[in-house]
Image 1 (tube, rainbow, N blue to C red):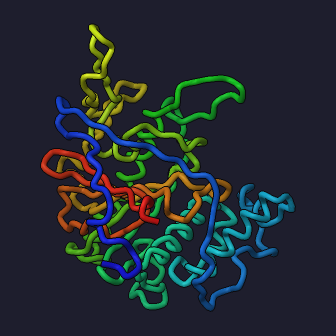
Image 2 (image 1 turned 90 degrees about the vertical axis):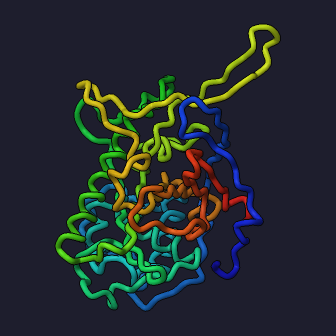
Amino acid sequence: MLEGHARSDELANDYVGSLDPESPGRSGVFVGCSYCIDDGLRNSHSPSFFRPAVLAVDPVYAAVRDGEADFAREARGVVESLWRAAAQYVDADIQQKAAVSFHPHFWELYLAACLLRDGMRLVPRSRRGLRDRGPDLQMEQPPVWIEAIAPTQGTGPDAVTDGIPGMVRDVPDDGIKLRILSAIQEKFEKFEHYVRNGTISSSDPCVVAVNTGMVQKMWGDREVPRIVRSLFPFGHEVIEISRRDGRVVGRRHEHTPAVIKQNGAAVPTTGFETPGWARISMVIHSPVDVFNGTSAEGREFVTVHNPHAVNPLPLGLLKLGTEYWAEQQMLRGRRWWMAE
């Protein structure tokens, strides 16, 4: 147990739903609004994340670095605070890379700062055996490797497109799930490669941290978060109402074992229901971007444990956001943010 956190038995174990499609389920949903960055952690790296002389290829990087509007100044302050906290744990050339592709590198920096804030001990790049290759982050105790990824909206018929301002449309839920699943598959293959070439040990837990800040432009979600529905076959919630008196007599979720692409191909949503992704011990999800955050960094995290992991991680390892796990064919969750 990490010092300063509430014990797990002090928090509610919320029953979320059943992995059996015939069983009922229930849960809640929450959204966040603005940043509140803890600026207490420091390091000895370059005092500023942004470099005036670097050519800003990415327009978001340019807007944050050079903008004079209040929102740009606030975002710049957020990034500098994250940099002071986590610079020594991320790639040495992250400042140059961010000028070309800002959001994925912001996500890596934000993720590292959140883990540090939660009490996780990360290994500085200077102490890692392979400084210039290998997974993005390494936890010291327990030894865990973390790959961060921030998928884009994609291309082609299954791409996630922005809605037209002022017009109502359905949330492209399946499209977002496809982007999430593609990102996880990419990192799964990368972890397998790292094991084969000896970069990491086959006994080390592996975590994929997915950020959808470039995919979804809204924070709303269903009663079972999209990342959970991408890993377990939960579909729409079905509410059964009595015809006689109008009372709700039952709740369940449709069994949705795949997302169907525009070409008819089925992409499974059973990655954690089957051993296919056993190399992945846990998935972390966040929709945060530099302009849209939560009232406390990491509060929006959703972590999902893999019940088939070859190297499982203990429940409560990360006490941020909401944690989900499968237990006796039931999906359960714990809202750590309610203890803050």
